Length: 273
Image (cartoon, rainbow, N blue to C red; front, side, top):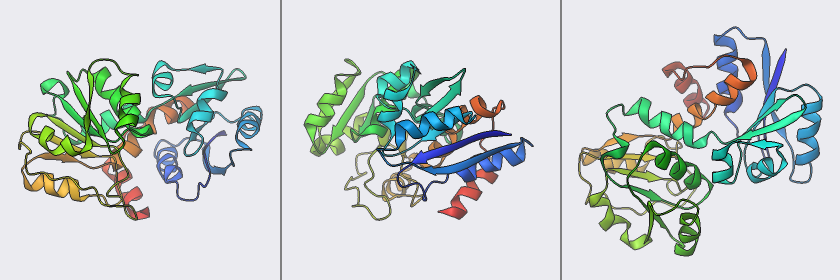
């Protein structure tokens, strides 16, 4: 039986076992996928023990994504660019690291908004944390002509922008709304607007109805940002699909089948929120 799992601290909140369990059942694969709680001090030795115990690999979530990249024998270019890994594959005694968050973001948008054209104009990205790194990397690889990055702490945005070259332009947080009238894509990569977090203070008054607005937050599924953008006639994409699509590459590596993100899976995860 093929074994995989997800490591975090804490890990009880993870929905990944629902996703992978659904696919294991759907494709009739003999395998397991479990939640694994490792503290920061336990992480390195714990991962090596899983490798030695015959696991095919693991997903990695907070607070271990940077440690996962450091621990790996081999890392994908996108994991290096993002500076963190969320997927580890154990092969021939070695640890291979990847970051599938950006791929998950992009494939979610493509699936939910098939008419979206990344090259139609600039993108506005809110936030400069780990998720922003993955989203920016994905948008640049997909061909966005320019990316405007705003963060409440400008210095953090400027630091992040240096990793991605001249297509990334930093603006002040207060300039996000004025800038929103001249972009074709808006992405919220912050936790603002999430259940239990501060609201995202962002006016949609300047939005052109032809643009796409997406939010990586999925609880609530329709954030205030998405609700207000939809009222302006914009296409919107919620963040749940990013969670689902980022799981696809790891499952394929570990279990040998490339799974499909379908509506049944979305409903299963939504029921667990």
